[in-house]
Length: 222
Image (cartoon, rainbow, N blue to C red):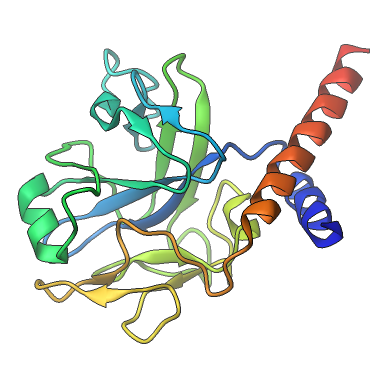
């Protein structure tokens, strides 16, 4: 419990807040199209109705040009969902994904070698952002034909890729990565860390961040 609280404080120091839905994998260029994975790290389901994705254009609503994620519906605790520029059926077949894994395909506002991944809720509020690019952030990974995977929960806190925080997927890694029929390597549809925290750790992490957020709000109100 003490370690979990320490981790929560460390993450809060790196970023003002950490939403329970996070960007947990991306591939900007693959043999069968790019993809982005979102995972619900919270303890309860999240309704994606009205939520959108966009790149560095930062369109926070579907009306403004963001990609509508409403079709995901309720995303359960621990569940990972995917968007891809490929057709959803083709993407699922290429990676051998189970029918239970939710995939939305054919989005047109795709990402480049250096870009942003932005997730907005139904109110247009930023839920999570990942700014990346091996040319922009020296020493970071280039997710071409291999997915980017965070090395820890703490690695998800910064809103930009930091050296050492994300690694390229390989078929020998501890994150469950596989090679798709197209030759791409990744672990889309599942979020596995090399050392997976216990559920109590997630609960303490989120609770600790909530307390810290409340303190910060009270300070701002003074």
